[in-house]
Amino acid sequence: MENGSKKKWNFNGNQDLNASAVSIKGVFNKLNSTLNKEDARPVVRLCRADPTDFFNTTDDASHAVAESVESFKFNSYSPSGGLPDAKRAVADYLSSDLPYKLSPENIFLTSGCTEAINVTMTVLARSGANILLPRPGYPQYQSRAAFCRLEVRYFDLLPEKDWEVDLDSIESLADENTVAIVLINPSNPCGNVFSYQHLQKVAETARKLGIFVISDEVYGHITFGSKPFVPMGVFASIVPVITLGSLSKRWVAPGWRVGWIGLCDPNGYLQDTEIVTNIKNYLDISCSAATIVQAALPQILGKTTDDYYSENLNILRETANTFYERCKDIPCLTCPNKPEGTMMVMVQINFSQLEDIIDDVDFCTKLAKEESVLLLPGVTVGLKNWLRITFAVHLSDLEEGVKRIKAFGLRHSKKLQ
View 1 (cartoon, rainbow, N blue to C red):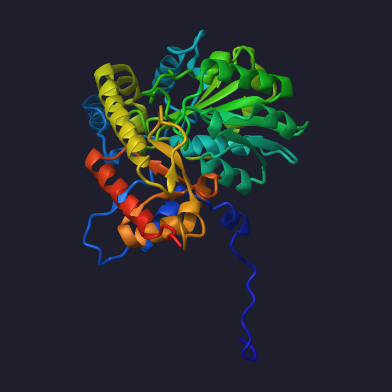
View 2: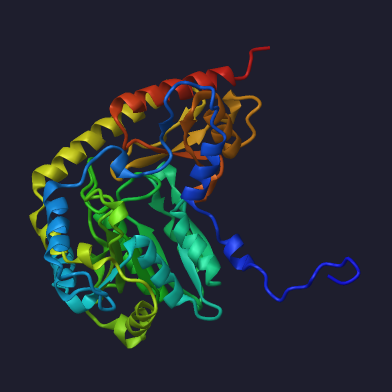
């Protein structure tokens, strides 16, 4: 250094990455750091939907992966887009719910659904383009869009209408640079399931606007209420649909990092507009899903029993109903709708019942410190002063967590004058 001055370097961190670093994992880690280490009670984690905290994957799935490893046939690099047999297995699985059949060429395997989101957002990020995202929603879409400078416009999900899409707002938000709308069904974070009739209206609105639908179906078939799961691809004759999915939730294997992109586009619009070409080009320069898990996909998707699915759904139905009923006894919280799918639900904070709590982040931070209970602040998923609460935990843990939340609320309740 000359004259005590600092050396000037030509490199700096990417500020765009800092701006886009909104993640559930990051918030979870921050809340973990606020826990009171002197509290001897076990921590109750109701803030992240990691099904491995509660469920196990199927024996058939584990055996299939073990066979793949022991065969020594799948230690190589994967072809871009995935192994042919694995793509065929996903195509057959998705086709079972559709009025047409997908081919392996309609499927691209990715390193988890996160990578599928990254691929899709990046492919759409041409200069000046914008995309419509749900509020509340899953923050990976917002983060990736910010990172690749794709403008985001938010449409509301309406709690008073069981979290249906505000269709009127979609038409007012879209313009000639709008390229797509994202729909998460069943909904993370709301826990609702969209009806056939409502999904058809979304498809018709998207067609009217000249945009396609990105349908995040990671929680596909994880429904336990009055509405069945309807894949958006059913309406692909109306509007092109890109379906995203993974092994993470239904098969309880998030760490295996296998997801997929499914092109539900019988009219070939995505091919004509070079979206398909762009996806292929992106996958040529990105990491692939592990070949040993890809090779196991035909057995995992084809041999998992209905009993396995039903048992998990029955457990989720019980914990969802238990939370919904117990929440009624907590004056500072309101759960507007009983969850009918996924593993979480949105709950509103009633600040009229509280003092010395300024917002949802403050609520979660103080709750973690005082009661060793972790919840996700609603601002993380786009809805300030709400909470996202996961019920995919052991029933005893859920009841203990609710008990502590109630005690916390009473401790911070407004005192009568």
